[in-house]
Image (cartoon, rainbow, N blue to C red; front, top):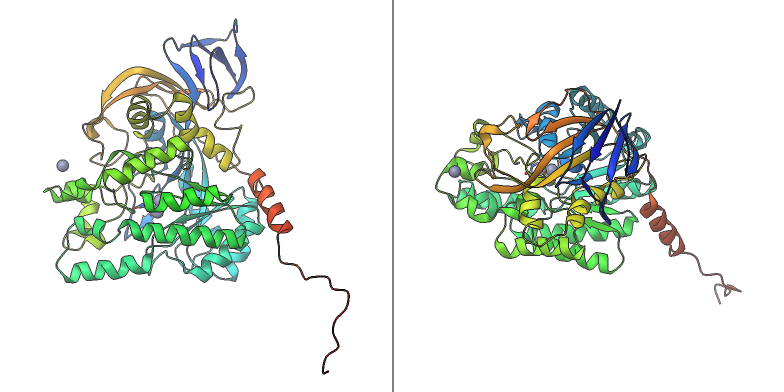
Length: 483
Ligand code: URP
Ligand code: ZN
Ligand code: ZN
Ligand code: ZN
């Protein structure tokens, strides 16, 4: 079986050119003219791009007394519908639980995936078992380790644990990741707000000002530098955090920042909505920010100081959000976005002239494929690459509405947004899963993608750290003692 994508314009992170693409056995077999195949997909007027990779999802995750509602089935179906062909989900051990145990739980869930997936591992506590099992996790092809500097009393790790874990990740040739918010300060501010009668969802935003994020981001960067490990900062929402990342990168530190499509396009005014449900549905950490912070994130994508646009897809129903009526700290944190990331970023990024189509591909797919050592299996349109592709119609339009989404929840934080730029076809390992909004994906089609440690950035960084490591000074003589 072979498929040919005809009459399209290939758009990658660095090239734009007209050519047809031949797909065989789930991979790209040829790129050029006069190719023939069994079936044809018409890409006239469309861009043929690497499928999106969303490196930040929480599918069916136990969190804040419940489970996120989109699981690997509905979550990956949502992804494909919006042109995303791979997700990287966080395997999350509860404090005290072994990493391999958590991995088993995630393996039990992920068999339902419609598209390919990988995992990051979360380090939610520290001890010999965690230290030991990290090696086994890397051997399984999971090379990125996430640390929560927030969620005090639950998932948060302290600085000594952070430093120990970062060093271990560095030694194993992996990448350290952080949710950067000062959890101690958030806990104090939350308690004070509640005591003062600030119980509504707007208090969630008051409890997590940009300073808690800026401080933690800067701390994580310095700790990672001392530990000699590359650092990936998830959900960068504000200038305070972006500024720390920008400065670090200018100093040659190996740091990447990931803004979310939500923070790029929605702002803090959502929390002041008179409708409690409306505001609570948008409670996530970090919270949405003001327009200046939003501009900073867009500038970062343009300048290259921010590298990846993700979703942090962690979807809770309205009923679940209502656990927090009367106490904002009990509102499950998280929002959806998997289905909308690509169309929203195209609409607000490419259609406004903030991003070129090539930059769009870079921040939705290629950059993260390189960071996670998945490239060019994923994130590329090259002979031999997986045929995870999106045939993108820049003229197709729709209005986002929960009524027609794939996600299992009952609302959409982008409700009513008009988007222009949608998949004509989404192709997962050579199989057409979506045709102009019509789903034809298959549960269980998705495969786990293992990753190798010690990518090029790891090798360069450890070489540099080795060269500049503390060394004893060689001296010709030692003065006699006890003179
Ligand atoms: O509010 C959020 N972001 N929920 C998901 C868990 C996390 O912190 O990433
Ligand atoms: Zn987080
Ligand atoms: Zn509303
Ligand atoms: Zn997250």
